[in-house]
Structure formats: structure tokens, C-alpha cells
Image (cartoon, rainbow, N blue to C red; front, side, top):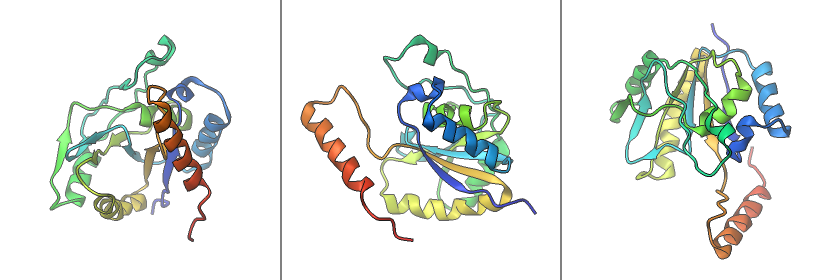
Length: 193
């Protein structure tokens, strides 16, 4: 029997972490060394929010550079991990009767590849992405997560990627201040075990 894989959330931070060597990227690298190698990865990235649930079914997902205003070096990064169409179809069946679209146009966005290029730098582990339905509440996604948890028993690593709050320099000062305060408040809250 395969070892149960964890579910991990990565606060990926600035997209430049994809090409950086720092405490965050070193921690991600160590995670890849410490975990048993998964059969595949299911990534749920905060950067694929659409008005439906979809899962990538492509055998060779593209590296999506879904950001702007960064150095050319970042746009040249490719993360050529294979997809796993059979896992996408398994997820579709697992979530039934919920309608899950099999997607052939999305690839791996920077919420996925900017972290995974440090965790699994050889891009040898197949990756599929599941969208977030922007029209549904958090409780809806929580129920999906409970159904997906069974994949962990099949040596599938489930990863979430995003940040607690965005930091965008184009926001006005009041909005930036509010985001900073929310982040500070939440980071000081105790976690229930």
C-alpha cells in the first residue's frame, strides 16, 4: 500500500521566488527531499478562479506566465512536468454528481510552477490543476476538499498555493494598509488543534 501523502498549502509569495534562492525556496526544496515521491500532484492555485470547477486533462500542460511587469528571466522559466489525464478523469468521477469540466486550455500557472520548480526541480512528477469556482462560498470548496482527501491514500500530493492576502503595488494606500492589517491580524490568531 502506498504511503499517505500530505495536503500542503504553499504561500508562494512574490513570483520572483521562482528564480530566487532564499529561505522560502530552500524550505520548499527540503519538503521535496523529505516527502516520499508522489505518483502525481493535484494543485489548487489561487490563480485559477473561474465560474465553474474544472480540472486540467492535458498530457503536457503549458507553463503559464500569468503576471506582468517582472524581469525577462521570469518569463523564460518553463516547468515541463507532465500532466496525468487519467487522474483528471478520476477527479471528475470522484466529485460527481458535481459537474467538473475537463480542461485542455489551462496549464500550470505560477501559483503551481513557481513552487514546484523548487520542490521537484526535475519536473518528473505529473501535475494536474483544479480550478476554484469563484461563484461559490468557501463551504462549497471545503466539501470538495473532503472528497479529494481520499486521493492522498493513492500517493497523490494535494497542494494549495496562494497567499493569505495579495500585495499589489498598484492599489491605493488605503487598500494596501487594509490588506497589511488583515494579514497581521490573521497571522496572530491561535490555531485550533
